[in-house]
Image (cartoon, rainbow, N blue to C red; front, side, top):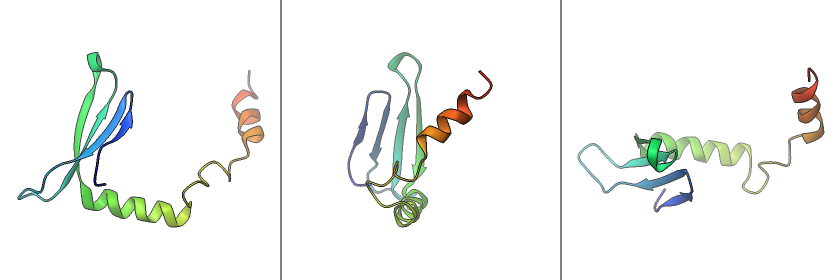
Length: 77
């Protein structure tokens, strides 16, 4: 929320304070075909706070049954 993050085809960085409030910029995709989006910082900050209470940092993948996900994905193949 306070500095640049990301690598490759996904990057995010904050804007300076403005009359519209503080924004976050998102760059998605490769240089030859990318999109740049600006979103208000406050809703993103609230959403991230909620996700961290729901799924603590470092536990993002712990609750996924990868074998079952793989079975579901390939069941019709």
